[in-house]
Length: 324
Image (cartoon, rainbow, N blue to C red; front, side, top):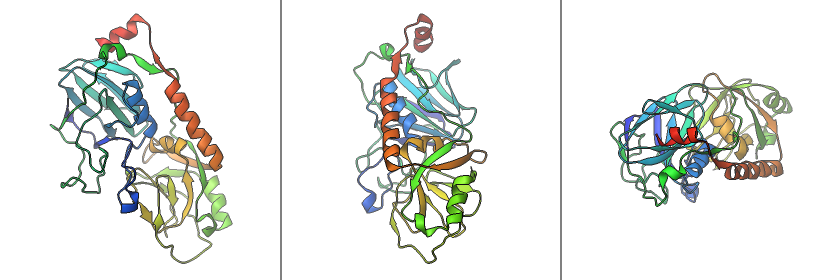
């Protein structure tokens, strides 16, 4: 099991998300960077949907009560085990009694720490994902705190033999100023032609007031061509709502399941990790239109490359740092 020594500003348990309950008003939740979450699980030989720890915005530290195999994936952090600094996107064998530290360093917002066997906190509605704005287990959800104990599932694998697995190449090019692909939203025609042009030609800064529910964008105002109010309708992660003030909001993992603001576009799944890791307050994004067909092909290609590029390193030095 893992014990929380120092929680980050936002440290939660997340699996692939609480699917099938949106019709009842329950958010999907799950990881902010779904690619990092999937990669970390694959590196430690877990199912891709297994529960892991998500660390957000600031440093965190954990104590390993048992020997374990971990992988830390994401952007903007460094991994330390004891006094050893080790690479991200790589499986690491950790001996009992070691401290696992995730140091905030560089650009990026989120890190997933996966452990072989998966985090085994009690599930709610078929998922272990933490939904901070919901009460699903009789007690209000909360981020992890110091002294919290995280049980780990039992595994039959020889853990040292799974150490030093890594990706052959970077799965995605995180950037301070990424270009994000979108498909037109259902209320695309609610906006003036000039606003559509502005949306694609402008740079938007990620507001520091953003959170797991939505990323607020600061930039040129988007004016509507159509007046009136929209009847609330279903909403999903990636939808870009434009409220009355004209400043877009991109829905994120904990977004509500319905909304009443018109949606100008939706971020494609393959680019959602890029947006999630754009630094709050300093990061800027630009948008480019794409098709549904390209969006689907890009996601399939991203997952295929991730699942086929995991390699076991063969050099002695790599095994020394992996197994201590």
